[in-house]
Length: 410
Image (cartoon, rainbow, N blue to C red):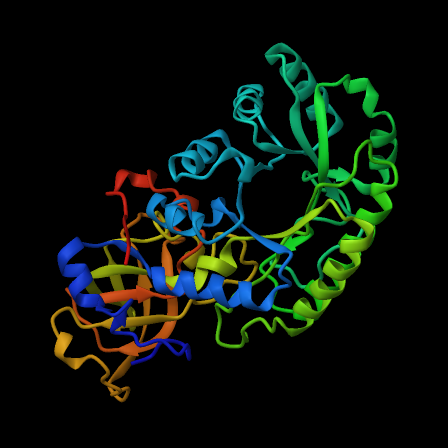
């Protein structure tokens, strides 16, 4: 079997035969392994300084059973909409452990966040003015941190969130004056800290460590003008996972070294501050698979196509249309529909070169391009690994009105 060199058992997942999961629940299907998520968080917790918190970015995967699982394992969650706020509360997360970021918060969302007493990461001076007016109308103080757009960037990131002009956060050079004039907001905004997030999906531990050190030094500089002591410092995340054959897993060694330095220094210089990382993909990305069934096999001018019952409408990222500049294939496998007895088989001789496409009427619906896979027939299953993050919720499920994808937590 060929799974693009990733060390998965392509026939089982979460201790269950994939063919059995598909037979019981149907396809297309996302399955998430609770044990892998729990172990990832436990391993990270053991490596981090004791004072360093872990927050989960719900946008990575908002599947409610998964969020409920993670809620009991992390110190807080980050949300990016009122819908995610409702989800966090439904998952049993207390508002004090919720922070709300995003460059386009509606007044109604801000009002809901103020009423719930969650921490709001403000992204502009204009948002602060709107927030102060909302808090005044509610007769309370809004909990606020400033999201900073640093002058530096996280090199090697799949998506750059800081450095240069960005829609995210307030440029670092604008913040001292904003903090020095905090009194203009009356007593309606309670300043709590800073949120510095410079990039995502990075596999270079040294680059992440350098960004963390730079973020901390920037926080120290900005703290001098703050109207109150820093109580929370979000150092961002950026921890990536390998998707493609040439990629290696992230080496945490330089990151942990940097965070130990920061935690030790912060205990003296920012004694009231709670430091934390904001992670999404790193916690859940490798703990999910997408399973779709082959419904047709056809040859067009000498090239073989496998046509499946799910596509970019469920897994936009695997189609290459979610942040990839050059399209590359995710790790994939063929699982025989009924040969559950063959679990563990290593026969790779009987392969063919194919492209795997979904059911949509667009050439963009390409799940794997020109890959060598075992000979497959209609009824067999096509599995995409590394699918625990930015899957169903990041895909256009209403496109062409195909059935919604199923999701389950094992």
